[in-house]
Every structure is written in structure tokens, then in C-alpha cells.
Image 1 (cartoon, one colour):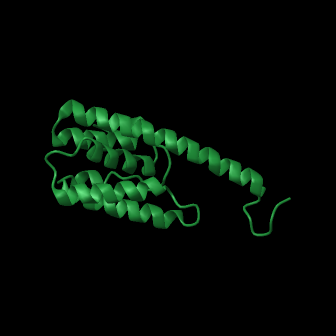
Image 2: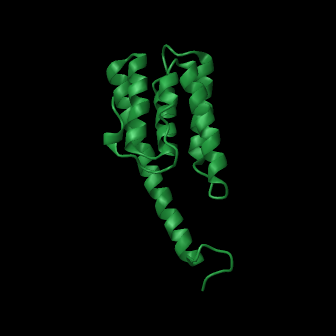
Length: 146
């Protein structure tokens, strides 16, 4: 039975679909974080963080991209970046850890994009902020040039 005003999908099935999406998102976050960490550690320079940031974009959705970037900066202890940028990275990590709000996904994405742009500016990566995807969906690796 379908409730009035719903998307036409039974509530139980809708909950299952949302649960599946959350599981995929968690996997993407872990993959994005590991790849961002690997690239940043391999370089040991700001360019490594930038590569990690781009890798997060390629591997997963927008939320996992933000999470991967933030975790890379925080877990590596972000040597060479300002205290202000590190604070922004932590704030972005907290925001992205909450994930995309089921009730208001656009507000969640807007907040994350805003923090990501601020962080990119603080790190001198203004061009990277412009590569953020418009929607929260997986991106093909061929769409990004390193």
C-alpha cells in the first residue's frame, strides 16, 4: 500500500533503498579516504593533497569526496597548511560525516560545497573548487584529468 503524497514507492521499499544508498556511500567514503591518504602521503607536498582531493571526486559521490579530502588533511596532520585551513577541514569532515540529509539534501550539499570552496581558497586551490560536481552521484573516472 502506498501512502498519499509519496513517490509511489511503498514506504518499506523506500527505506530499503535509502539503506542501500547509505551502505554504498559508506564504502565510497572509505575508498575515497584511503586513496586520498595514499596520494597525499606519496607526494608529501601540497600537490599530493590536491591529487587526493581530485581522487575523492573520481572515486565516489560528492559527500564521499568531501569526506575523503577532509580525512586526508586531518589524518596526515596536514603539515604545511594553516591552522585556519585545518579548522575548515575539520568542519567539513563533520558536515560530510553527517552525510546528505534525507529531509533536505540541497541544504546539506550547499553547506558542504561552501566549506569545500573555502578550504580550497585557504589552500590556494581555487581551481579545484570549480571541479565540484553539481549532483551527488558517482562520477566516471574519465571525466577528471589529473
